[in-house]
Length: 480
Image (cartoon, rainbow, N blue to C red; front, side):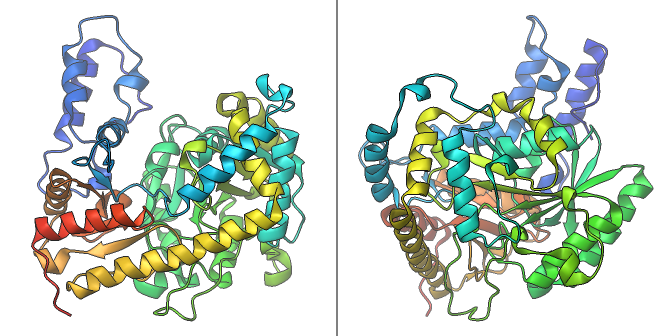
């Protein structure tokens, strides 16, 4: 397997590594999350006769994901300008409140932009205006045990760059971070590309046990396997609400994560990007409400020691606010000033733009508008998720029950007799050729072939068109 942090000393050695990278995709049924797919990039690198790029760039492990996503984005469906384009049901974007946010933000920018916003602002780590607004939002909506103050916060251009900077700060090349599988495919990019660290999928039990305290037994096994390989584990990440399962974790499991991190002296990252996108599902009437790690007093609730400096909360305004394009996220670390100071040294690389700062701080400070937007977004998520899940059910295809996020896993395994991950990739390509971009379950480290993650939070017309294209391509019929 090619590793991005391995130095290549000669052109011949580079060629050999490129050949190895290209051959990684030739196995008949290797789990897709383990592959570095061959692509035109490799051919161009091998044929390039000009001045050489760095080994890091040439052997970047995320080239295939980036090129596929860019290709899709270049041909997106638009009802007026590109009606034959690709309907995006693969990337988690929330278009349910777009009209309302455009109207609100348009007015906010006109009124809120100040002369200081035309410069670099008043803080490297985020303006005082934005950090105060974020602190208030967390204090009023996440019920923290210890109030969040601006000094606990560093902002950045979305969770992607915040996690990139965080992993660069806490992980050395080759260090491992444990994450329960399936998990968000972006972790394979933003936790790895620059830090050179190693994401280890932990295959927890299926069903309700996936979010239960006993799932931490699988983490013990994975940590021991890393030790046996000579790889040091430095961190564990909890994605709550979970992506792609769309579930919230009970308090007991959150405490189990804390105890695991304390036992093995690990950084504990809690990615809470979908915290305010929790909605109703009549099929799961007793699901646990979202609980932030900020609301957990580990020592009081367990009676055991817990080093609070290991806990870091990551959040972005992309999902709950339907604003992926604004690129604003943050890290909250309430008891690790050294980490925050270290991240300050490089945070200029992810400084939030003044217009985005104005838009979000205006909304966060407008408490009535904020509450109305979040409440309406949850109502629309309930309706959209119910519609999508029932659409598949009526056609004999099982869609997972969810209570959070913008997506659901859909099981095509039995319907299409899919038994290999190569067949899953072929299904993905069929749908892309039919004008629908989806996400493969294998890309999220789901251990069973034949699943796709479908985003239902796009506007209703786009969702219906995408589903109609899926129906036509796969020959689905209403059976109930």
